[in-house]
Amino acid sequence: MAGRADNGTRSHGSGFADAPESPVRGDLSRAVVARRTSYPRGHHIQPHWHGRAQFVFAVAGTMRVRTARHAWIVPSSRALWVPARTVHEIQMHGVVDMHSLYFSETAVAGMPSACVVLEVTPLLRELIVRAAALPAAYDEGGDDGLLMRLLTAEIRGLAPCALDLPLPDSADLMRLCERILADLSTRRPCDFDAGELSISTRTLYRRFLRETGITFARWKQQARLLESIRRLAEGAPVTTVAVDLGYERPGAFSTMFRRALGMAPRTFTAGGEGGAAKRPRAAVRVYLR
Image (cartoon, rainbow, N blue to C red; front, side, top):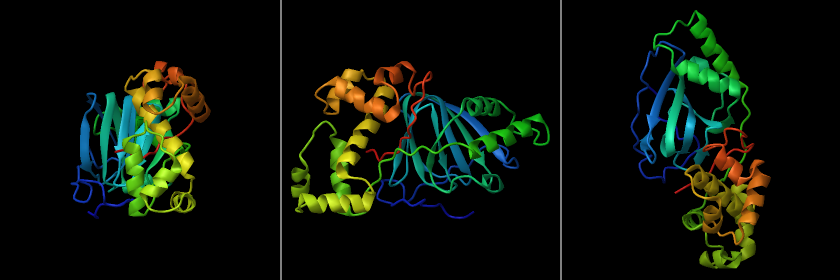
């Protein structure tokens, strides 16, 4: 088997460089293998990789899926496509009912070539639930095979979600990002951050934009947004999340959240760890400690 892929990541993450393969269990003569697993709150799957591409979806609960350089918060309205041989780890937030689909090399034609969060349609959700209930040796030439082909076609047509938090390439800016992510409640002026690196604020802005593609101010706002999604998915009160992320007024936090995701934080919380009634339109990809 070919070696694991870095999928554009760096190996500074602990445990990623020497992560083992996790063999896909099931009938590997089938183009698509479906598995369902339930995990308790806080469960952590250590870094690993699969020989097949994986479509990771939680019917209930929220997951944090991380590679060496990026991590994605995946609520129950979304799924993550993970190409074959990509090293990743998964952290559960809440009780997670995970449904995974593993695709053979021939079945991934037209699928994304890199990790990407995808918006799950109501039709696809029901197809995934049915696929996970099929016997391992399902009849590919019969109705079960038709279901799997329809499921595969539906995934190919899913819209990618674009809200991401890119990371800089240089070590000093990476350390700055890690420091900010470790303490999102503190709002330091930009000249403080620049002074920490012994550079001017103008140089900080220019370098950050060049290396990440977004401004430093927007990056910090997105970091707080994505952390709030994780906290809300774990059941934290809206006011507590707002205060912990450095907002003086909960109303200001709610305005930011609504503008980004198309719903108020309380609506997101009431929907049940991802908004069952109304789905957020945005994606979530963020580097988290």
